[in-house]
Length: 258
Length: 317
Image 1 (spheres, rainbow over the protein chains, first blue to last red):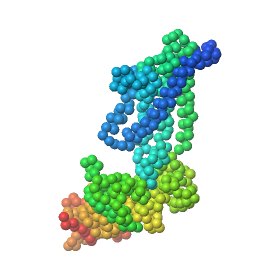
Image 2 (image 1 turned 90 degrees about the vertical axis):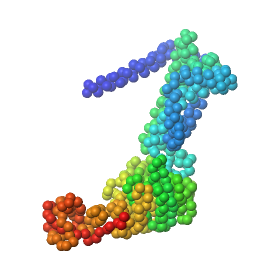
Image 3 (image 1 turned 45 degrees about the vertical axis):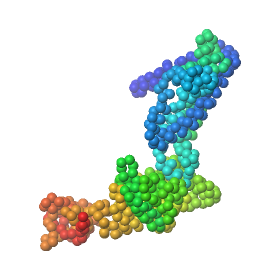
Image 4 (image 1 turned 120 degrees about the horizontal axis):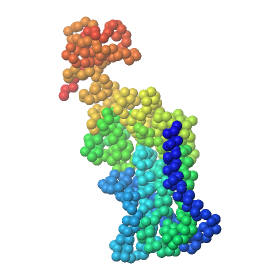
């Protein structure tokens, strides 16, 4: 009995101290003087532009990585070819690599004097999109691969003997089996894309009102001693992330029917 | 008629099928029988188009289908582990092939309810595969394969994952089904009793080759070689001679042609009794007797009896 309570206390205490307390503190400090100043802070032109940039980055990176992620998972699991092991390992690279390194690499490749440089990629939105896609790439692949392995190939073969084309088999047999894994991957990808700081910071050039995403804006405000602006933008980011998670848990119970 | 000619299939260094030729007559129920690793499942998958052979050709009703994908071969395939579509109900599983073919809804409804009736799953149409027993899932698998009116029905160890009682039931049921529909059927099994009970013709395979093709009775009475002899039923081996346990006669007194043995153990299996015997040179053999015979001889373990084969087989090589 004591052990049970000790375990609960330890795990909940850990969560409270490390996750809930800092987040709660942000909310508390933000709304210390009421909603008025917060609203004013998040509706300045620069703040709105930063929000827009973040949403655009996410809106491009998430669909791209979802489609690529599912295709890549199929390629890794369903087709044995020389080098498929390397593909499997390379997919994890963004998880292992520090985002700053990613940013620098993009800068070297696309920046002035780089191999593919000089086309308005670096210090502009295209570079930030590339950086966001890079860092949020592994999540859908990593969620879908184990599920594909687990369901095996028999159902797909059965569909083939029943006359289903490759596309029909994917749509009617494979996709229903992996859609929840994909959805979970999408949530993780979204969270990563919203919160990306390091890589985007390097390639963006950080021009306020132009190439500043919401995370960059938070730091910018904080360093300018505009704590209200920094906290308000941070709260917007936190709310976006929480909305994504909430959407996920709202969708998930439907899975239970099967 | 299914005709496979000179099929070779390798998996890396392993030769799964080594120049195999098999004919399956139209309307027959043929069993591919062999131990695991004999290549029987691979041959079935080559016929279905799920594996591409490295050499040889497959023809269905005289048409060469070797390079055709499984989608256009008109085969029904039943998998050992059911391969049920987990996210679809029983009804939708069975309707799958017809839905793919965009048949009118009326026709699909009629055909699916007919098939569910045939496999006795009518009441369970709205269930998901996870809510069915193994036997029910496999009957669903059969209905799903039959829905598209396949020219041949291929079953890959269909009852292998089921318990002994259900397996016997489904075996009989499959035979009755075949007698009604006469669909050309190939069943893969490692169970000789299953092959003998259900099939008109048995193809015995071993090590990627065909050992013998014959009706069950001929296979049992005239096995082509040692492998077939010992695979299709229990056998005693004395030197070069093979004797079935039911061909061993026991006598209480010696006569010129008998050998002396001692009864080691009596195993009662209901109507029949297996008598385990040991010769004075240490060789063991078993005899299969009825209970009446054992009672008439008043057999007991430790007793000396004299054995005589009523029928024996010697293979020339």
